[in-house]
Image 1 (tube, rainbow, N blue to C red):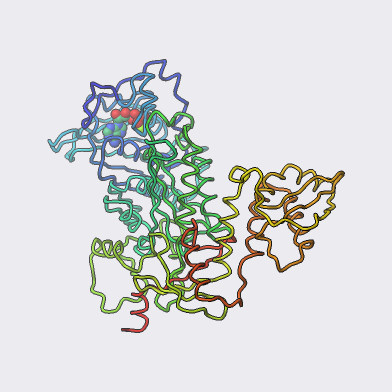
Image 2: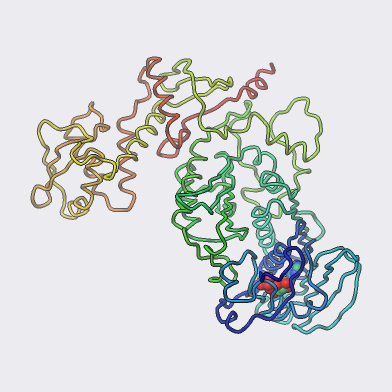
Length: 596
Ligand code: ADP
Ligand code: MG
């Protein structure tokens, strides 16, 4: 914004100068009710609203209305605001680089007015009266005054009524309503301090409390999910002091068949940034069953000059400097949060299941939390208000440990497979010895890269006699490019003419029990496989091959050492294949289970 603007009141709306118009990407295409909702919600947020209400009828086709309590539009500017390239948010080329607003092209209201009847009611002060204009085909056809508190109500009616071809591209009201709900949800989760209300055909579909992210999640997904949130927070990434990440991911028992509940926003703008979404997925992928996705909300904030939202017509993509470091941080945070979340044993009722109604149903079936009954046993529970429940949810001692794995004291070995252990707080843990050891070995192998290896040192066990390994020519070619990485893992190979190699050492993790020749052959075949993730496969297979088996008795000292090593890894709750390795029975759950 220009410096002569008041920061808390409406800046005047002005046409953009031609050189700015030239620089901005053609945009603001209104495709469906959800695009209208996105633009109107963005305008409300840009006006400093703390309360945003979205209302729709017949999926937004008949009516879509967004009301806010922001600073309004000056009465003289109302008509101007609905013209093309008129805005209060940018004046000069330089402004485009330091934008803190969601809008800047001055096109949205004009685009809506071109395809629907648009009514704008605006009050800029506490007089209690609003100036109201109605536009048809972009032309002002009525002007009046109506009572209204400070803020703007923008109403789009009969979208595409005069454009049957465009209207034919829309789906039914139920589908369009679900799209509007998804847009509203994504803004509500990106702006948890703003209270959002969504009303569809008279029914309350969503209402967030306008407090914080936990409150917004509880209102959107229910208190059960809110109880199971793991924080994702980081600041000052790799020398990027201005970047902060905040967010949450729901513990692993909550997962979905689609990516629709992975929410990413940058500077308050929900984004479909491919690289960052891919980074998030790389982080959570190994921690969940195949084809499942978490509820994940990642909010990134960067200095305004480091993001350019001017590359996509609907501003759904943005160019981000430092994308690689931000992606790496998102990947690490997600992986660590989910990888450290033990499976909870919920009071005898079996493992907690994902909340239905969120998993499969259209978002519109989400209910207002007051109507949602809490799952699980809770004897002598007093009826409590929504906020009290929220508070309880946040402080419930049964919530999965947000902290890293606590120190565990081994009590016994069960069935030669599980270590039974307790934490200082009195929670009971069952730890799968094979998977735990697998995780520890896998992370050690991860740390062994060509860069971390001393040039002369061998991290493998030297073979008394080198082994000759014959491969196919294509295997040999693939392998030749990987000799450094293999040497870092302790597998030293030397080309021996043609497609033959001499193995001089084997990874110490390869396990002494099996015959060296057999192991070497298998490993080298693995190492010569096509594909980008060969190295990870090799690490997983090495870790699996050499981890303590089930059925192997462990002394108390060995159990203790294993539990201590497990505390040091980044993802102590899942094995490298992605299966759970810790089950936790909280003390409170035991108390309930035994009716103590
Ligand atoms: P842009 O948001 O890119 O500036 P729009 O066409 O969406 O363009 O809006 C034009 C102008 O109308 C905005 O710059 C702003 O000054 C004003 N405006 C629109 N909606 C609101 C609102 N809800 N509250 C206050 N001002 C608004
Ligand atoms: Mg706008």
